[in-house]
Length: 337
Image (tube, rainbow, N blue to C red; front, side):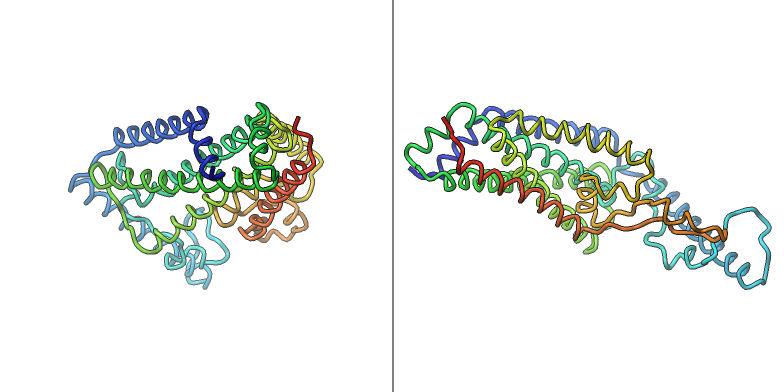
């Protein structure tokens, strides 16, 4: 009997997995139906008005930039109380990451190019939760019911059995995530075509979306492995759920509050959620009030520091990898009776 085939059959036959897939499809269906019901294809007059508003907004930005340059050079003095930065390049339209476009002024219109990334984040969040719960229940139920012991009777190699279980689980989750992602994004692309706008789908858009999707798949695999490892260490699915609940309440909420009270330096660097966010988005900018505390000159101060995806990935790999190694070490020596 092929061990991998047996694990695939066991995984697909689990009612909890089937229930999670049903919930996944249901969540996708509700999201798509809600989007479709709240969108419409804009008329020619709506598009013309939106284009005119975008042109006026860009023109206003250029006027403000020229006013800033004139004030800086002493050519004129401001006749209003509007804030003008010390560095006029911050107002230069050519230096902006994004200029106003017509779609910014369309109401009740689903635009795929603008909504695809938020929708993808929703999908990733669901898949991460899906992977963690399925990973924990998959091994936890077998350990609690004695299924692993029965499996070891005909394949008495503990690490091989546990490794096959984990490998099969990760491969199945990856296949499911890829299929779900394609179907999910294709559905909303069709909605954009038929009941909204697709927007500008250039190489930068697909590159950015692909990067987010790739990072999301990695995060899902790490979450799946972590749920599997914690349940293996605790010999029950509830062990994984208990660890996550305890960490969230005690550290993410309780410790964060205490660190803010004692005015600790950069408490966000001690929170696991910070590294998850930095990995998914590529980088996060975090406010640190102590960076500007010594600035008494009245000059502007940038009190932000940046956490990039590299250190974030290292932390995520260290946590998931460490849990997995501990799980295999414990499983190798544990009495399973």
